[in-house]
Picture 1 (cartoon, one colour):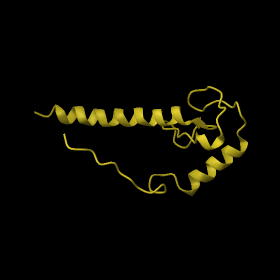
Picture 2 (picture 1 turned 180 degrees about the vertical axis):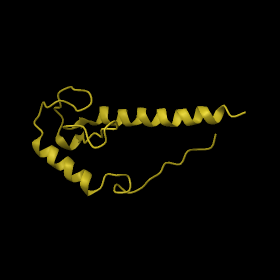
Picture 3 (picture 1 turned 120 degrees about the vertical axis):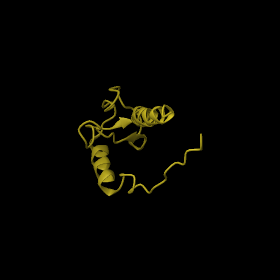
Length: 95
């Protein structure tokens, strides 16, 4: 299997430009220590710089509040792996 090349676009090309940064900044200003993680629901005691703005992949836009990096990035990895896995299985079964 050939090595997979990771696409490395700019933050704006990947959808994290000024609109994303503006919404994240607004949420960071309203965030209070102990507010729940938007994905996992546990209290967030980390500094705001360590929190992410989580996407709502079902309805589009963003989930309310902020999310811990662990849950936000794990959710993205799981979703991406599922998408890649389905196409890889289909390709492997072409006889």
